[in-house]
Amino acid sequence: MEPWTEFEENVKPHLKHVQAYCAYLTSSKWEAEDLLQEALLRAFKYYRDTGKLLHPRSLLYKIARNLQIDAHRKRRGVTVALEEALLQPHYDPDYVSVRGMLEWLAEHLSERETEMLLLAEVFDYTYQDIADVLHCSVPAVKMVLHRSKNALRKRGRPQDNNGGAPRGKMTRRVSAPAPYAIERWTTALMTGER
Image (cartoon, rainbow, N blue to C red; front, side, top):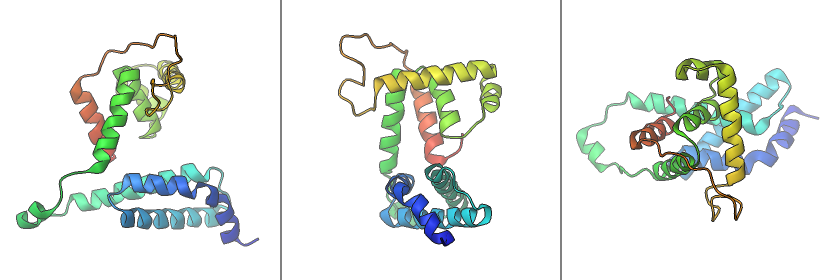
């Protein structure tokens, strides 16, 4: 079997998810398509060089995210004339969805749990890195992440009617984080920088 055919068979079941992720990361349909194509190209190069593709969806997500971060960093240093800047739209539809998801997380997890979860799952920090940043032990990080993920599994997805909590059972009350924490997390997710 040719490398491209085998690669295509491994990647095909994940394309819809990766395409949605690329659309989430970018501001337009065309940018999302370009990002998807570039991610597929990079993944194929990796596959061709190593001969293996163990977790195609994770690999494509990571490649797409890194490509988008690189593109953002390149654009950040570009100076735009004031007249041109005034013509550009200032509304970012991704901001609303990211902010909404973080507010939902903050309703169900403490500020510390949310912070650890974002560092681990979004920014790919190791347990040791999280422990160093938040001044705690690695076992404490593991315990908090395990407890947080279990709590979220029990609550379900944000679009569930009752927050995923089983009927008749009490839900855990969490003190709301400071509004600046949610804004800081939103900014970090939007820019890709912790």
